[in-house]
Image 1 (cartoon, helix red, strand yellow):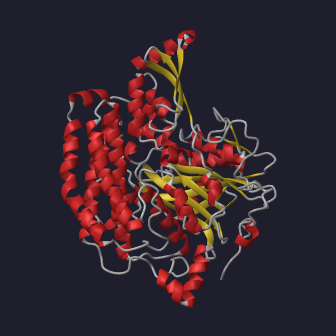
Image 2 (cartoon, rainbow over the protein chains, first blue to last red; image 1 turned 30 degrees about the vertical axis):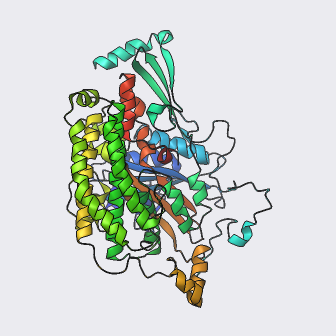
Image 3 (cartoon, each protein chain N blue to C red; image 1 turned 90 degrees about the horizontal axis):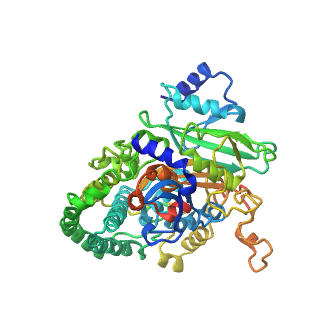
Length: 175
Length: 401
C-alpha cells in the first residue's frame, strides 16, 4: 500500500477532504485536512477495509506562532499494523478560536491525549467527555507549551542565553 | 454481565457509597498516583485517577536543549529501563541526521537494551509477587537486577539514570570487566530466574489472586492504545522489534509470547517469557558480536577522544562545537519508535534546523494505557485493583513526563 493508493482511495470515497498532502522527511505520508472535516477523515481512515488505519499511535499539538490563522496544529499519527504503514493527519486551527471535534468516540485512547493537548496548547476538543487539565495544576492560567512562554523566569539577569543560542528556534543552519 | 447489572444497581444508591482516596502517596501503589475511588464495601464502583504529580515539563525542556543534552531527560521517563529510552532517542537523532551506526555498536545496543528489558520485567513481576504477599522472590530478583546495574556501570559509569551511548554509537567499548560480568550473568541467571518462576507460576495462592484480576479484552486494549506486554497478554502479537526492526533486531531469533485473557496472571506470564526471550537475544548478540568500531565516524556529532582534545586543534574545535550544540542538523519531521519495556516508546521530533528541537513529543506507553485503569478495576475488589496496577507496570516518570 503506497501513498498513491492511499490518496486515490481517499479521493475516491471522500472527495475534497484533503487540503494538501506531502511526504515528510522520514518518508511518512502526511495529510492536511480542514478542521471541520478532520473527524470525518479519521473515521474513514479507521473504518475503511482497504486502508484500515485502526490504531491511533499518538496525538499532539504544535504551535507555529508566525503562521497567521493557522497557529495551532493538531497532529494525529495512525498505524495500519497488518500492512505496516504509518500515516500522519494534520489540521491547523486559528489561535483565537482553537476548536476541533473530539475523536474520543473513535478511539478510547484519545481521551487523555486530547486532555494533554488541551493542557499544553489550549486546543478545545468539542464533545470531549472530560476536557480538563491533566498534567499541570488545575488553576494554571496559561498553556505552557505555546512558544511565547519562556522556559525560565524572563526577569532573571544572571543568565544571558543570547550567547548560547537559546533565545528561540530561529531556524539557524550551520552548513 | 452479572457485575455490570450489580454496578448499575449500586449507582442508584449513590448516597451509601464511600469515597476512598487511594494515594497520592500510598505504599501499595509504588509511585505517586492518586485514585479517588467510590467504594461499596470492598467493591470499586468507579475510579478517577489524577496524574501529573511528578510532571517535569520534558517536552518544554527539550525545546531548550541541544540534541545531546536531551538524552539525560529521556533517562527519567521510564527509569526502570533508562537505556532503552536513551538509545531510542539516539536512534531518532541518527534518523534525522542520516547517521549509519556500525554493526558492532548496533549489537552492543541490543545487548544493553535487552538487559534493560530484563531488569524492568524483573521489577514488575517480582512486585506482583510482593503485592500478593510473596516478598522472598523480590529480594532475590533485586540481586539479579543489581548485577545488571553493575554491567551498566561498566558501560556508562552510572546505574539508574544511565545516559548510555551517544549519538552515533556507544560512548566506549565493552570493558573486560563487562565481558566477565555478562558471561557470569548468562551462566547463572537462568537457573535463579527459574527458581523465582517456580515459586509463583503454579503457586495456588498466586494463581487464585491473579487469574481473572483486572482483565481487558483485546478489542478494548487496542482502542485504548495498549502496546507492549500488556497488549500481548490479551493475545495480540504486536512488537516493534519485529514489526519495524531497528538496531539489527532482524538478525536475532526470538518469539513474541502472547496471553489469552489479558488479566494479571497473563501479564505476569508474558513478562516471564519475555525475560527468557530477551536472554536468548543477549546470548545471540554476544556470541555474534561483530568486530569493528563501536561508533560511527561522525565528528560533527560524536565527541573526539579526550587526549586528542588536549593535543590537536581539530579535535578541540569539534569538542567545543559538540558540547555547545553547534552541530549541523537537517530540517524535517521524524518519528522513531522502539519497543520499550512497557510498549511502543515513540519520539516525534520536528527540527527547524536550529540547535534544539522545534518540538519533541514523547509517545509514552504508560501514559496511554493507564487511562484504561478505571475500566479495568470497575466492579473488582480493592486488593485486585492494587494488583492490576502493579501488573500494568505504570512508571510515574513515564506517565507524567
